Length: 375
Picture 1 (cartoon, rainbow, N blue to C red):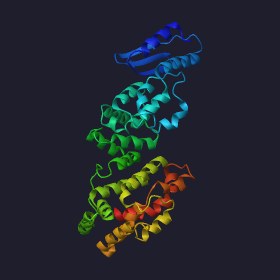
Picture 2 (cartoon, rainbow, N blue to C red):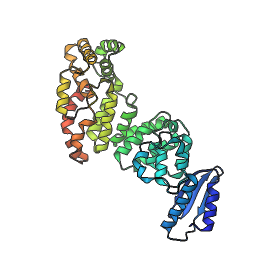
Picture 3 (cartoon, one colour):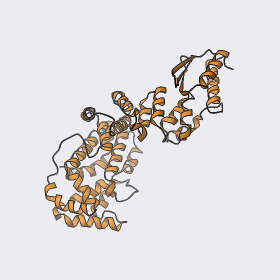
Picture 4 (cartoon, rainbow, N blue to C red):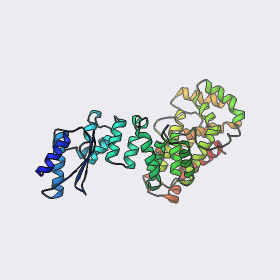
């Protein structure tokens, strides 16, 4: 049992307007956020500390959830997928358990107010990223607070894939000032992970200047005409030849040349899938670059979709013969995706120059088409 003093104080606390609660095991202290402000209860254990802390949690859980066993830790994967019930999120913040807190920050029903309470409980980059995936938080008071935290933490982030995700999330509209955005872009010259974050969030508004493709003026007429008729291949090729597309492709080239981490490469290919989604030939994805290149060279777009085949033919007929290789390159990029990486990453954990060497079966076939579209 708890000491009489602790039992009384905890029961009084739990009957107040409790909003969040955490337990500092090192200091043996319970901290609480209530409608009247913050409260603190020093614990006075009358048995081994580990046993006493378990009894404290049982007391709290009995009051909050009506059961003594607290939040089931075996639901860790489930709750990190955002499946915690919305109506129980407020109660989970009162348990003083890390897994319960994780369930809240990953919940699809997270609100700005709950995010504020969760942030009071624990400030971490993982929780900040999880909460910035929810529109209610991005649009609320906590959005800029979490974004500022991630910006400050970026220099200390060791996981490159987390860098990509942090940059992607803070680039959402309204979270950071333009000066901060430009500074992130400049730092991306040395940290390619930052640039990949830009590719995933702002592919058409990258903070860089570049002239359009030299063929844009000649091809803009027929491409614009086909785009107006709803041809996605013409629209995508026009997008690539414009200044915004040239900047995008240069950024892709930079990321491929500088890549040192498998997680960043996966993010890059996810960004490419999203950017070229309108001209993807199929949903299954290629696992071999030679097969992908051979299919693109046939210039039929999508063998299983007559409409797509017709649209590719219309684009080919609208272009002068000498420029038809542009369509082949467009189809190559439209077929790229994360499945291409699986056979490579399944057999190596290489990083740095070793990773770039391992990727050569993909990049050797891709760079000529990249050079064609963005010379």
